[in-house]
Length: 212
Image (cartoon, rainbow, N blue to C red; front, side):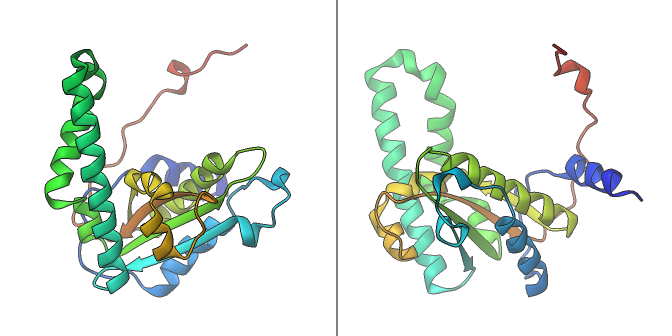
């Protein structure tokens, strides 16, 4: 199979995994996924060297650091749920915009993020802020590289969007050993899916494209 066709197949098979088995992937698989993160595009125009601009933290289920990370994230989710809940009550017209997300936060406030409690590994990528401010775009490239590599390895992957909210959490930054207001964070969980889901549906690019 040609490289382009292999890549096309991987991209089409990429999907978000919602539940994970307790089986731990081999270290070499995780190494390949992390390697793909390192090779993702970054803000070279900032003048910051890649080894300084991108840092990767791998948490493993059952460790003290993982337990602390989950506790800090759960506390942050609860704070955010309370803030948005008060906003919706104070300004009822915002319910249409924020209501569904508030309900989701309230659900996670009780037991945390299900996949974060199940998956063997939680990976946080920290991208150093600079000028021009492209850290969010850069870390998104890193996440996509890992997602596609995990798909190619037969592993499940889910973005943990709540990680971004930890970029200003001093206790979480302390856990990572990072300075305040220096990095933007994003995270994901990786492991074997508990069940294999159907392949993504076929999408027609013509419905999304306008040739100019």
